[in-house]
Image (cartoon, rainbow, N blue to C red; front, top):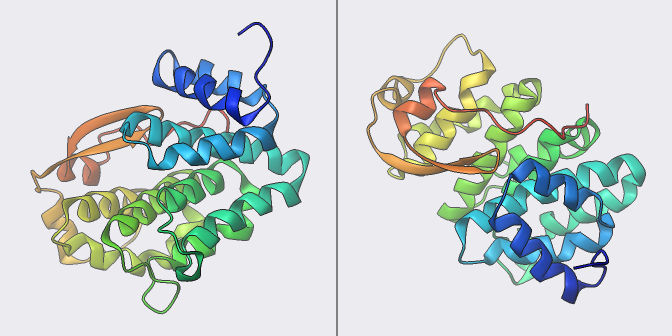
Length: 235
């Protein structure tokens, strides 16, 4: 395309092509050159795509875009965050696929957004908060909290108790993502289920930094994978 895409109709195929191939950092640089508010909608539309890599890279890209937008126009960034939060509300009529992951990515990448919205993300795992009942959404919230924990552990440490029950879940995604999220918090005491996770051979796909890895719950608990893409984090 000779001229930069500007409409939704142009941006969607352009973004799909860029995110499905090539160096992901180069892709993020290209996306950040586009008008931030115009790329938000096509990126969110990919959260339900059948291509797992496209879904995950769209989460990363939205995080980078909204972090940049938060520096330029904080209220516009808040609008995006409120949209993600609304999608997780029963009254929205939707399910909110990708929303907790995107919230984790945004709060990991931008200190100001973490200060405003980190506690809301954590509340999705708290039984006395805005607890998500859907098992797959819980996976997303655990990954999002883990992304925030590795970037800003001080934001997650006070809510660590909310992660503990997932260490003993029947779902290996829950166990792996919870163990990964707890790893950087430096807690003096962990529940007995933590020790079991360190020996858990269950294999799950795990996304970080533009790449999907195949790993075991034990590898996540031991911290044997990269923590995430920090190249575009804002403070």
